[in-house]
Image 1 (tube, rainbow, N blue to C red):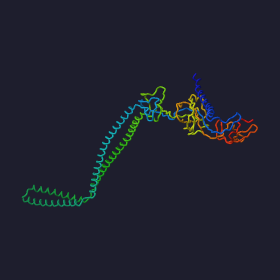
Image 2: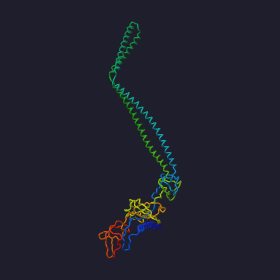
Image 3: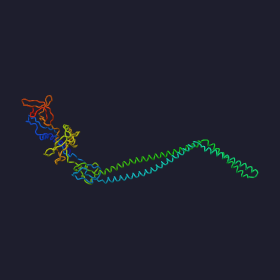
Length: 488
């Protein structure tokens, strides 16, 4: 049963489209006659050439809509705390929706506390690292002094003894020799006295031992004196080794300083990047708090978004991007319509139009074309998928056109159908003949037939404009009669 009824919506849509097209095509002469008065008078066979103002127009049926209709979407997830009543007229920047800001404020406070804690921890770590770095720099300074000291010692060693050292060594040797001669003389005197029994032999032996010690002292002083004249390579090598060790220790201390500085810089950059992300998150949370308040971007009337299972009210949870309400401004209305591909080339923005809402019996409202689509679409594109499956495509392109209505009236209700007459151009003092009076001769030129049945004049004319019924021509005179049927 459902399959048998599946064609009903499609057929209904097709019938509706056909009705609109037929009505639009047959409504044009009625509007033309009402607007422009009677056309060229005809007796059924001939017509009188008349001179009057001519308007070339396109007539279509459209739907009334507000020119401005802003939609309010939830900017963040939250719970509705305040919602403007439906139907309320609001001004620009008036609050129409307020979400509960407490969850976002709590998240922002938590983020601020986390940022302060991280800043304090980083400051403590950096102070400790700076203390270690300062100690390492002081070590480098001390190691530099040690390197300088050892280097100077090496330079002194390589220079050899000074004149003072030589004099001291020479004086020391001479003193040792003089002291040895004096002690030998004393020993000789004691030996002579001991030989006659005046001195004990014990004193002689002590003096002999002193002489031997003094001889050794003389030998050592002589060795030192001779040695001071020769540069000792071992001493030089030992001092050079000390210099190298001092340099190595200093370089290691410098590398440690550089490493500590790089680590501090790396930690500072890493902390800066991390805090940048944290501050961005804090900024986002702050913006979310501000986004809980939704104001009207323009004046309008509050219209709730309709849902199948619920209505919006205080306490309702919403998600980011969900449409909550619309703010149509009914002070200015427009008619949305379509024009077929054969006539869209004549329609341009800024052209005057006349609008007659359904059921309106007064003078048509004035309007102006404000939008002409650059790209067309299939005429059946807006049908449902079920209907399109039956009807297919229309194989005819239509273009969306919008006409703004001037003035306000209670009859201009949104969703109401309206007849729109777009005035393409106006020709003053135009000579009009019925389109049926225009024929083509054997050369393809446009001609009209004048005169009586016994004397027919075939006159070539130039067509300047026209509609489905009348044409503006050049080559005829006002008051002449043209044949609209084949003359007898």
